[in-house]
Length: 520
Ligand code: G4P
Image (tube, rainbow, N blue to C red; front, top):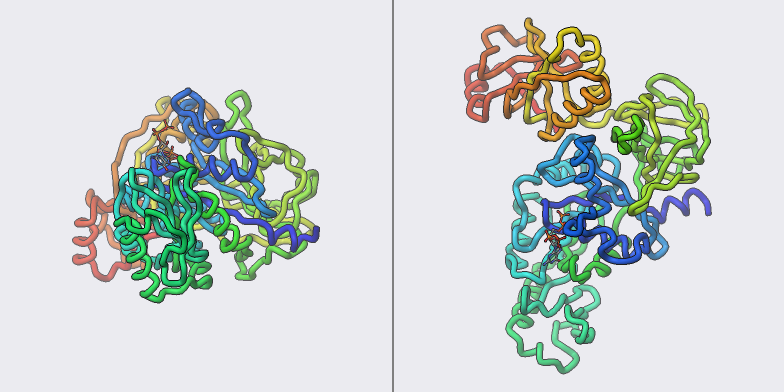
């Protein structure tokens, strides 16, 4: 196969959901279709004490170590699909957001009974902002949930995105009969004993079946005709720009509607896209010369080793094990001989991978988040990964003052790695750490102890609204107060940490000359 042919059959997506919406269950079913696992339940089995494959997180949490998203690859049809798991909201960290930088599309799983839940809204907003195409799977139709119309409206309003239902449910819960496939004009029945039924152009049932006179069927057809009548077309351009999401109804647990979803996904999801360099050039995935970037570093996946795994998204060319690459940041040349790919419950040495693939590189401290690796005498850096506005803050210091050196070294490395964000108060130089999720602090504390042998004292500063300042020269001492703490970020930029929305507004009213902005 040529590089172009190999790249064209790849699809790389992140699966995102509200906790308990069914992300793990859906992932398992997708892996089953891909033959990556043999039977249901090998992945999922919390109650038996086993962990779902994509729930490495829980295992990691128990060990108290780095909690991040995992990667799985499977084959379907003639496609190679990479799934990147993202943890639920309580375990959010910047890693979760960065994962979205490494994919070309996202699959969002929604619980039909709950709809869009506020905790994870931000994740979807990041997708939207980056123009990442989103596919929506509305799950648990075997239970009673919100009306389909209501759900679509909720998605449209909250996420500011058009919806295009690919199928429509007939009933739900006990009376869930099946789904109407909009394109093929078929009804796929939920229960095995029923056969597929067909509809004509006017959505009239062709076969004779008691469902014909069922209220649920009539309602579904009415609603679908309304949707059809609204005249929205399935605009692939809009999908690719992240302005329209195709919506599928189903039940992951019952493995219903999952294959329809997967078939449509491989038809419409984009192949790997290029990435922009710091100079503004776009590196095409078909470019023969190898390049990639590190978007996540996972420490100590195996507690017996101090190894870290750096996750790399290949942007162009082919990766071959043992190849020489240059780390652009340092100019250091290195041979990559220990690399891994991730399959269901297994990691395997990867010998060959191409644009769009995600591979893990064993790392003894060479890599940082955002690093670019290039092959064959190239020299460029991909544009910086976005920094995310932290929301919670902690003062931190070393318990033992004799450990200052280790303390600072640990902080420096963990900050460079992207595990946590660093701020310092003006004049007093008190170190304040910022994070998107609470878990980042726990991971930080644990790693400081285990990797740098330093016990830290963490003192909550609490939730704050961090705002950077466009015109720093306009800042005066009078603006620094307990309700608007002025700090430096690690690049020396000034940042205000506001107590709450009210304090932010009050500040803006009082000092309208200060131009505040937030990161992603
Ligand atoms: P998550 O990864 O998004 O957190 O969700 P997960 O797949 O773990 O699913 C959360 C719960 O919802 C699980 O039940 C799962 O069995 C159930 N579930 C998933 N899909 C469906 C569906 O289509 N219909 C119904 N009725 N339930 C579904 P649990 O009791 O929390 O866990 P378990 O003990 O069953 O594993």
